[in-house]
Length: 277
Image 1 (cartoon, helix red, strand yellow):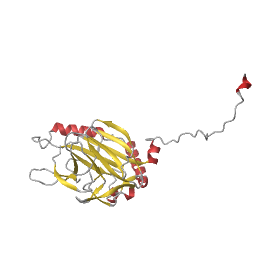
Image 2 (cartoon, one colour):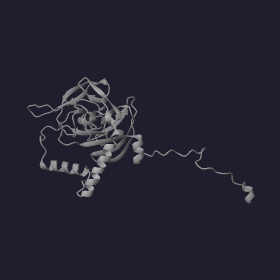
Image 3 (cartoon, one colour):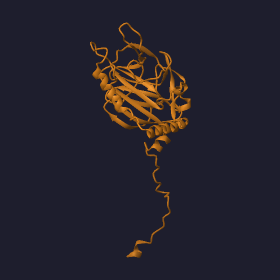
Image 4 (spheres, helix red, strand yellow):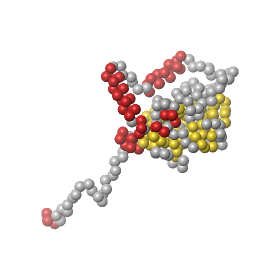
């Protein structure tokens, strides 16, 4: 079955066109998982799951091809903007997860899988986990969202609904984004610490994971009409890391269980119990 895609196009009525693809997300309306080429799910460790926002770490495997599986659990059609390493997977452009970007459309209770960077309505180039220097985003010099798979879910606008939201709607959205953004330091020491952290992150880029531009794969899509609401109903962020990084950060417990047949310390035989009677 072809995927439905929606892409912004200049139309007289100011509508945008969409592209079809397959997706799976997490909050109430959608569920998002990452699966390998055999359908096995990569494990996630949630760090925040409340309201409209879901964040989790995901364990990546070097060289593994993967697909993003999105399930629409709602009873209405939804659009999903999907970005990998900060790049929209349909257009390849830098993404801010906004409603005017190209997005895939899912029917009610629909489930789809998206396996690569879309290069036409007929095909994609497969996603695979690789070292950052080999990633698609690094080829454009974009390091703004390294190792993050992001999904923003948009409901379809109801007929008669105003094209633009009021000031109160924009203020509420701004408050939500401010609450999610890390606090900025206002003192000099904080600025210096931030610069030092950026330097350390730059040195570590060689070992960070990214998503490559893999082999061509047939994955047909068709354009459909879809008028999204201006605000996302939910957003999902999956930060993928190598296992060794998750172990070092303490996200997962990588301690090996003790070997009951090979203790770390020597022990000696006690006297028979009868000697103490």
